[in-house]
Length: 120
Image (tube, rainbow, N blue to C red; front, side, top):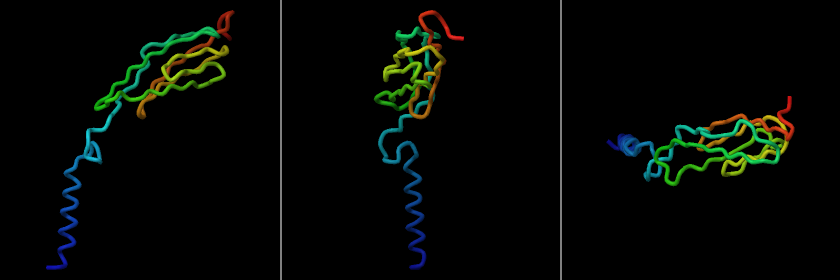
């Protein structure tokens, strides 16, 4: 009979672990899950020296507070984007602005134009 005690203990441990669920390994609240990030408003063009404001919609479950959105520019020589989604046009060219939250992202192309119009 002593030979079976380690197996019984192992079986009890496995049963206890599987009953805990997989939402949160700490046993607390469910984990925040982002299912979609969408840039809902963005200018198609911005003139050098001007600003453009982007808006984003994040679809998420069990997130309190709301997930943090990070912004990025594909080329900071042409445009930079602030943590709140405001694009500053620096030089004429084409950029892609990306909004990301918890592994999901959305992007939008923006053409930065000079004061005399688009570049060719």
